[in-house]
Length: 237
Length: 212
Image (cartoon, rainbow over all chains, first blue to last red; front, side, top):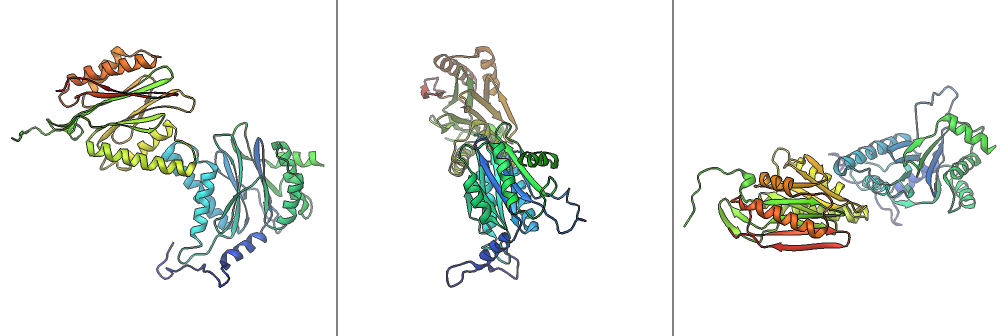
């Protein structure tokens, strides 16, 4: 986007070769609420905590984990409003793809186009980078579960398991110890919840965390209901 | 000497064409005539109307020759980009939808071409589709036709077609259906070409027909 007054980019190189706006965006991500994802052999799980500032907040209708296509979803860490712009763009792009090819947009293509949008905002006039890192989870027609991270710079990485946001270092260490290549989806969901609990202040229940799951059995991305989450938590106890 | 022609010819008939595709047992065949004309004057007897997109996907285009060639180029362009980006081959179903989209984009100033898609899907089953010049898709199990003698082609197919033909029989059936149809059409003919596609590969043969 180039507005008339700002045809120059606000993201410019420092003398040391850094793009400081991107560094600062990554700081915004690191201050955001933790989000994590695990790719099992038969599915992918992504989760985040949903703690609100006050008990008066009605959080049931606001979600952080969002489906993009039937078989893929996003979660984020960072600035919520920026995230919602990306969700909207990704959904539109996935529908445009379906209109053109009559096939669900593959996860990797979704990641590439979203990453491309994020990169544009580091090199266009009058705009700032998005203050979010995304975790993208999905399963393509080939049945392979996929988990990707996309950063404010537009860089993307494939992961077996990862965490972003506050406390991500501890969370990733925890995941590294627990992750196994032959992990199944049920184990992955338990591990995800345990990892979230590590950095959670207070009592974790079905209403203050969100979990999104896509399983190889039906290839559909869905959010777990608070009741289902509570069941998993009870099993973990 | 110039041939004077006073009746306005429809733009889809300007160059003349006959394209046909049929499904067999684990194979598909696609064939076309070779004529390129400018109204009634024949200008070439080796004009390609069937194009290979990949080893298991062919498209035949009947209609205005410039659009036939341009669509071939556009389809190749789009397919190549897709295969580079997605790191996989395009299935016939996706290709058909892509072609339909390309045609509909020009809804109010269309490409004057009516395509025929023939291929094998990922499981190796035959896939046939056709569409009109603005991209309305029709998929069938048996045969698809297009061109200035499409009525003749439909008649020959209905008569000669049998399901589950082997590749040699499919070749014969396609060849007979095509040659008989173009003989009654002034604008198509001058020989033909047939491609039979199986999992093992593609068999292409030139047809000797009436050179008139």
